[in-house]
Structure formats: structure tokens, C-alpha cells
Amino acid sequence: MRGLKRKLSRLQRNIQENHHDFPTEFHDGYWYAKIPVGQTFLMDIQQNVQIKQSLIHTLLDEAKRLVELRVEERMRVVVLIDLPTLWNSELLVFQDEEG
Image 1 (cartoon, rainbow, N blue to C red):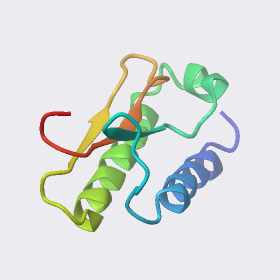
Image 2 (cartoon, rainbow, N blue to C red):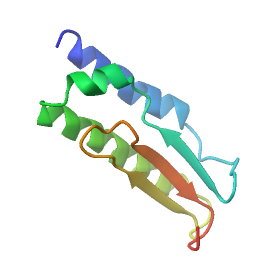
Image 3 (spheres, one colour):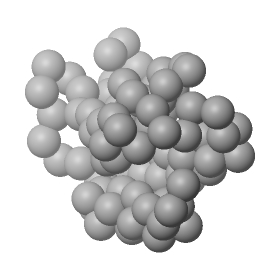
């Protein structure tokens, strides 16, 4: 696939820019952000395990960064991985353990 390295770099940059600060607006006790990449790209990489792993690691790294930014220990940061396509993958932050 052409431009793969560029697309992965852009994805990582978009995730970091979109979540620079810890979320402050919660709806029904949680905040979420979908993976910022097009479905066409995800369908094109279905056979490439290394790229899929890179996307998953990007989400996990962002979750780790959000954990470090959180102000209250009771807030939970979760990564939802939707296999095999990754299309519905997202970052979630719950306001409390019961969320």
C-alpha cells in the first residue's frame, strides 16, 4: 500500500493532537473517541498483521498517556479493540469504577 508510513504517522499525530488534555466533558458517565482513520484504510490492511499491531499499540500508548493525565484515581481508561477489522475500536474514559 502506498504511503503507509505517512498514514500511520498521521494517525499517531491525530490521536495525540485530539487528546492533548484529559477529557473534561462526559456524557452518561463516560467519554469516548473512535479510532481516527477511514474504514477504507482499515479494509486495505486486513491481511497485514504488523500494521494492525501498530494501530493497536498506538491506541494502547494513548490510553497509557491518558492514565498519566487523569486527575482522579477512580476514573478508568479503557481501550476497546474491535477484531478483526478494528473499525469500531475506541478509547473510553469512565468517570468511576461502576461505569
